[in-house]
Length: 147
Image (tube, rainbow, N blue to C red; front, side):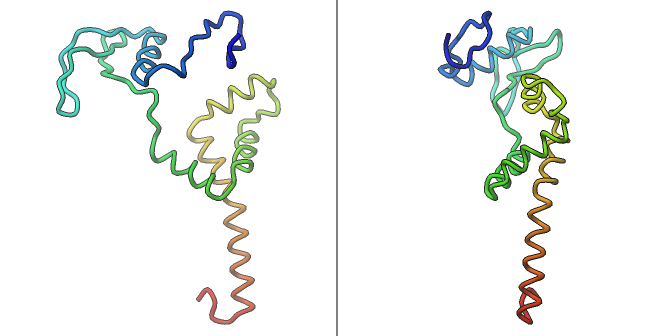
């Protein structure tokens, strides 16, 4: 069995070898969406096909795009080495300790944006308070510092 395949029904397709377009199309297919002939414009480019969910036009969904705003939180956490604190805060917010191990992993992987923001704020709050305390201590020792 290929690494990453843990279930017996896994077909063990080498997903990592697929192009981004192939991955997106596979996701659309798995969701039961249908690629139909449809002329439409997107970004000043005309397309001949589009994905549909029933009669709803979806265009070309991109499951690989990452929200640039959310990625700013991740970059901030990583730049300050707060990955462990963030993970712990998210774990606690989701009450994952009460769940079976496999289900806890699932819940963490699919945490809502609200839970992720709350964990970010909690994880960075302690650092903010520590930095403020250090600055206060330095300014009280050296007149004129921080003013």
